[in-house]
Amino acid sequence: MTDNSTDSASTSDDASTNPALAALAQSGLEYHVVRHENVDSLEEAAQARGLDPRQVLKTLVVRRGSGDYLFILVPGDRQISWPKIREHLGVNRISMPDADKALEVTGYVRGTITPFGSQGSADGTPWPVIADALIASRAGISANGTAADAGASETGAAPFAEVSIGGGAPGVSATLAAEALIDHLNAEVADVTDPAVIYAEPPYWNVTMDALDSTDRLGYPLHLTPGALHSNDVMSAIKAALSGEPLTSFERAASEARRRLPTPNAEQIAQAEADFRA
Image (cartoon, rainbow, N blue to C red; front, side):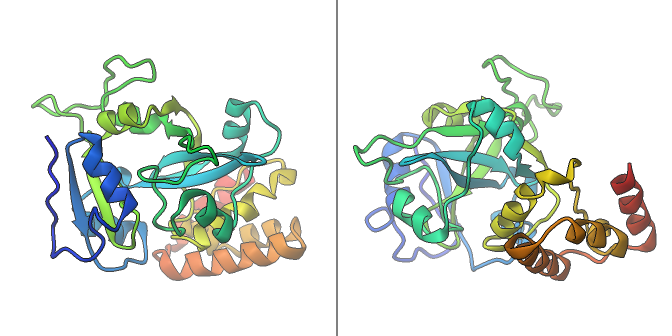
């Protein structure tokens, strides 16, 4: 049974005009459509949807090769791990398409991308989907499909059994069971993320990730917590290793992240510097 109710007045983005909602309506899944005003952060999106930020899924489209793309579902508190994805896919190079190409291959603008109702390949085959392993484990599902200890409540319900995924239009999302979502999309469950370091929405999040991916030459991971972003030592070391467009992109993204994230205290900055040196 499908719950196609909404939390606010419906707009023109209904199943007759929105491919994502049309696909959801035809899926047989139980889901709940939520509509809200534009938001500026993951936290705002979670609050508008009445969920924990960890339940808000980001849908990223990744280019594996010429005419070959896939979706990756990422929990709100995680970021895509390029090394893990390259290893998992067995490729040396992957990338994120620019905004125009993302629209072309999915039918959705950045910030609204979802596997539901996506255009898919030239022959109509849906792009494959990878769901980060945390989505499954938090919902009480293990990677092999058996029950997992996800910190279930006294009632037996997993704490993050439900997740929210984009609804194909700004301010539109669908909340549904994570297990049902993974099964319906025939998603492959794999460990493809790392802890999130910058909570900012596209285009800044994608720009930041592009910049971070180009810093593999550093030889150490970048954990850009608010403390790190406000540390002159940390930021100077990173900038010294970059040049050209990667440096420009990084500076722009870091500046926007500092604007959006809470200002850290001296102890948090000191901890970030210690972690960075370690």
